[in-house]
Image (tube, rainbow, N blue to C red; front, top):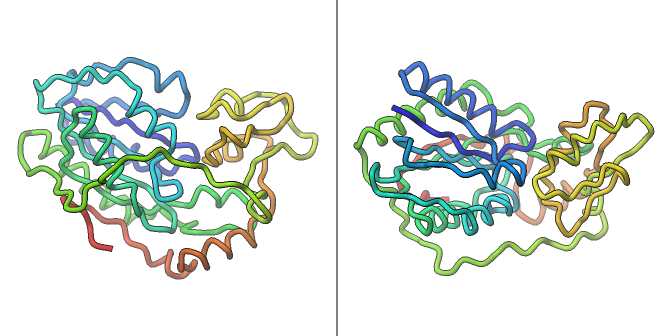
Length: 281
């Protein structure tokens, strides 16, 4: 069996899950390929999906949705799918605090629009991407071994599905209309979310610029184009000199928690889970 893992991982959380899943699938004698859709070039690369028995998608959830560039990729990429293998797919999401909200429905809509059949979904808790900033700490100790155990179970179920078993994912509350994501306007404490270069330790390796999913970071100026930035925090996480940072996020974190009615304690209690139909809250 040949499986393709297609995922987006800026700070490494989703990639941790992919590596655990890949290793488990290989132990089950599967041939696995992985591709991180992090750069514009990676999203333009043609893929012959019909070479694979199944596709496992893995995406973080940003502001209740898939990353903007992934939604655009689904809408703009030429998938050229045939029905030789049923185009079977499963999907997992990684999140660091808030619930998935529309992400499930949007992913279901986009997968079906381009011709994939969805059979299984999973939600896996991981360190929040904003944890790279001072004053933000949600699910900082995740994923843990319990999460990884469930991730292996997710792969085992996926393999069974790719072998021709299982039933289609049941979306009992489908998305009525797809609307592109409208980025929020930054104000007050939320301006501190915007990454920028600080200090004089930068060696101009340009990782911040070359690996930015939206080509928003300008290494020469040490700033981002706010109209393009999706706050994935990859530039902060990957900077070898720690020269790229956010501002202090303490107040922003408190405001977000109050608005969406969750706490660090409730986040610590979040459980990863697998399901074959749209889950109850």
